[in-house]
Image (cartoon, rainbow, N blue to C red; front, side):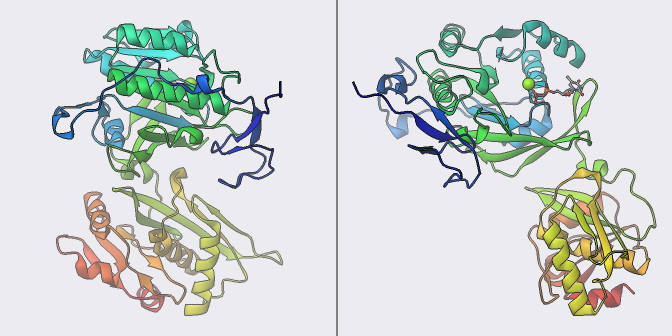
Length: 450
Ligand code: TYD
Ligand code: MG
């Protein structure tokens, strides 16, 4: 009998190939191919015994209230207004970022409201989960825990108990016995997710799947699953900063790019309902090089402080750094400043930083970066009640950006008096009490600030 040939998968994106490759042709990642045994036809049969008849569109009932609110406002916002019954949600993130903590807190909120919830962990023992729960506070409702990694057993339990919400922590520890590959392999995570999808849709159970973002090893990352699930959320954060951002990158039931902001404390995650206030904590007053920008995260305006330090260089090549924003963009903006308004930046070291550890790659931040650079260069501080936003083009023109009104309203809410913004945006904003200063190009901006 001919020997069955193994297949190769990209553990980043799940691309399948018959031979090993150095670079994945699909996601362009290097050295991500792993070898796995091939799936047999019968192994691919997902979700045993879930046979459904076709139904008329007009007869399909949609109950008005097919969402459950989690009780965490930030979480509900990211999901598009609560948990959709029967949906499959992937929660990805680096190990240790707080995925298990977040989901356990959601379990607490749901069980407090008498929803039936089952938390299945393949990573921690029941004692460990209990210890974490004790740290989070009292659980009033009845939360069911299970320490299990065999998906066939899990399927059995879901069918008999039919909980409303199930947490699978994490998908990389789950396995189906009849698949030859090891837990965490591309075949296993795909097949187990396929089964969970059928169970979610067939039984009307909402399932949250935790997926670790893996850097090395042979474990498949959550991106492999993105196309299979209804909603993809990523939990992100900086090592040193305590805040965490939950971001929807795909949502069949709501808008993407929504974010929820949390802060990791010693008693679990606390919701940050006013991220602007949080980000502007500790901002220096009346200091050169510090400017507040109005940026957008999805549909949500967030004010952040942009700092710059410009000083004479002691090296042949000036040093430049950019933390929290794009390094190349900062270099480009410095070149535009030099060319368009004749500021000698080439002999200067420049350090730009978005304070608070946020990462913002929006072009609307350009104006703030330029103002911070100018302010530090001239050692002049900007009025502390002024904010700004706007994109800067290569000819020095200041271009309009989207959602200008939301940005201005957020600034007003946070007590700012003046806003420097692109002229085209300024002309279209009607209702605000803030003083708007519309600028067309860098020359106008320069005249304003000398
Ligand atoms: P965890 O939820 O276990 O991360 P993940 O499931 O994404 O791997 O979070 C672990 C980290 O969070 C750990 O470093 C400890 C910290 N933590 C707190 O700071 N406060 C808390 O109340 C809890 C439960 C955890
Ligand atoms: Mg965990």
